Length: 244
Ligand SMILES: [Zn+2]
Image 1 (spheres, protein in one colour):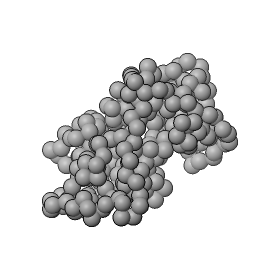
Image 2: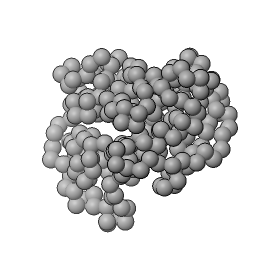
Image 3: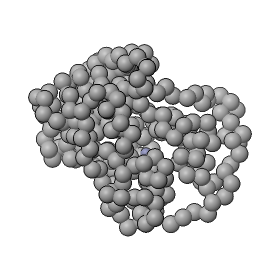
């Protein structure tokens, strides 16, 4: 299903200054010249879920004050590769059941697979909207309703394609003694980041389902961001580089 392509809403219409929300670029801290982030492990508790009872750990990134979570199941510090998901926060997808993206499904699938394996870790990273923040993500959605795709919308707002960085994963994983991952991801950039951070990571396919609302979003991720999408869906566009 394709919506008609029309000119994007002019940038000035969404001017951040009018509503006093800064549109700052995020740091890309996993680049080699950046200082490694320092974290503090603050607290942990058990977190019963539909799939398993995880141990939930709260961390604070010292230089930014950002709060991140880790959900851990089983003995992850044995040195054996650990089934893992590095999940970036998506409030609309993770908590509000949005079908504009595949985040909620990826989160649920990852938790279920870790539960099935009886051992694994899910890092819940607070970098909403591929790093542009919640409000800017809603701005990007508004732009997408005028016909641009997810990548073009970021560019219209003055952001790069993907501002996420995964540098904070290194000290978080180290906290649990995890050195090697079986990483549930479709994103080659995430695997590249692990390599740059010197974290061993082997990709594990992460199936997502397309629906009429996210088919174009998934296609843009595949064709423009290089995501390796495994089609389990009747709505996937046939010609947009979706592959298994
Ligand atoms: Zn999402």
